[in-house]
Each structure stands twice: as C-alpha cells, then as structure tokens.
Image (cartoon, rainbow, N blue to C red; front, side, top):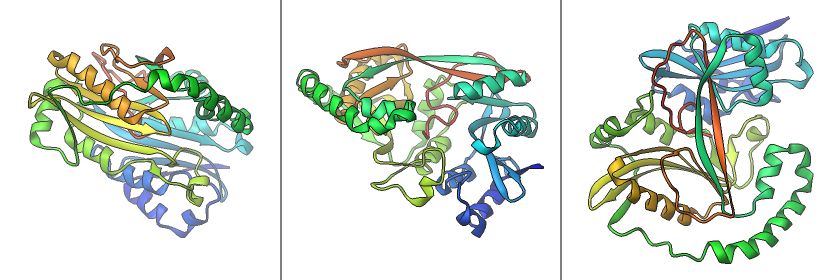
Length: 353
C-alpha cells in the first residue's frame, strides 16, 4: 500500500538531521536545498515542503513544493517530482500532485516541467496555461559536450567525441568572436552586492514588473541559501539525489549598475557550467541603452558558451554563431485567479537552478 508522508519546516529539518536520511540509498532532497526551503521568507511554518511516497520502508517517489505569494494569495510551486522506475504505473505522481493541490487550497503553479510531466498535468484536468515567457539564446561557442549529455543522456557515452568537435570548432570561432575589448562602458560602474539597502528596496518597488512583488528579503534568501554548490568532485550525497545539487562551475551573484552615479539597474546573474542567465533585471527604462551595453560587457567577462536572456525588450549586442528563440511555459490550477500576468526568468525556482 502506498503511503504519502508530508514534511513542513520543522519536520524537514528533523528529517535531514536523522540517521534514516543518512542511510537512504536515494535522497528526496539535498541537505542545502532543504535548508533553503526552511529559510524561505514566504513559507509558513505549517506549509508542506516535501511529499515522500513509501511502500513499507521503501521510498518510491517524492515531490518538492516551494511556497510563494502572488497578488495576496498563498501558493505553491511544484519544484521537483521523481518516481522510481520500479513503481511506474502505480499512480504515485498523480497522488503526490493531488496532495499538493489540496494542501495549498487548490493554488499551485508549475514551470520547467518535462513533456512526461506535462502529460500528467493535463490528464489531471486541474491545470491550465498561465503564461509563456519568451527570450533568446545566444550560442557563442560550440558546446555539444555540455548540451547533449544533459538533454540526451543515452548519448552521454560519446562525450569524448563531442569535446573533440567543440575544440576544433572553437579554434575557428574564438579568434573571430572573442578578441573584442572588455572595458567597462563609459560612465558606468558595476558593484557586486553583498547586502541590500532600503534604497535598493525602493528601487525594486519603482521598477519591478513581476506580479510576485519581490523584496530584498527574497533576494537575500536567494543569495544566502543557494540550491547548488560549486565543487571539483561530486559528493556521495549529490550522487544519491536525482536533481542538481553540485556543479563544477556555479556562481549566483547580484549587481548594482550605476550610470553617472545614478542607479540604472539591479540584477541577478546565474552562471552554471558555461551557461549564463539573468534571472532578475530590474531597471529604469530611461537607461535601456546603457543597460544593454552593460550586459554585453558582463557577457564578455564571463565568456560563457551560451547566454539565455528572457527580456524580449532588451537587445543584447553580442556576437554569436547561432541564435534562437526560447520559451518557458507556466501552468496554474484553474482555481487560482491571477490577473495582469508579468513574470521574470527567476520567478518560481528558476533563480536557484
């Protein structure tokens, strides 16, 4: 018989500190991801953060939930879902999603879902489209060795071949693309932010466009409690968790951009294994051109393989051998009434992953 166990803040903290957690062959959550969930400033003490499906003592699946608030409504984002291959067809994923649905008073949001999960959500009949976020991806270097193993795991055993193709291709691409100067644009200053002030909060309130109305408390949480760690060699814990928790290259930072000593933008940058993203860019539209030149400078500094930018109004003046349109789809439960939808790339759990 399938039993679903739910964990709130206190229960999750006790769970990751238990001997049972240490002995699990497969982990339902990484330790630092659990700590991040527990410190979410928008999570209530009794919110369910993790659902685990058991049959006897064997874990057969789990579902993570990220609490949030939108237009004065408390909601939950489905953050990750996994079912053991040995338990497929038992309806475990359906049961966990429906439990989350009931636990958050029929107010659930989803994004970054797989085609298989999308099929499940449509079959349940409780979800409908919320929004489609449009952006661009700029491929600055050949990076088959990074993309194919991630998107097509069955072909990962040809990694050496992909690396060879990348190396040869980039010998010809790099001299053309990457010899341009990397000077800071004139009259612009870029400050890395270790903390946030009331002035930053005021700037966010004036210029942000997300319906989630982020504050500096959420930015501090994202900054101080990341879900990923940068490591040279993956730990045993990371190998037992089916979602990302440790990466060879990972950086999550916030910046303040000044033009003639006036704030142009506040932004978050996420860099992971050659992929550069901008989950949050909150800016004064008067300085759009200055911001675009700043983004170009940042790209040159990081020198990534590819860049994703979900701000269609911004023109990113960088050279790339290939560009394509990308989209991110969002679902909501039919009972959740949301108006005038505007979202950032970082909304949901995307600022962490």
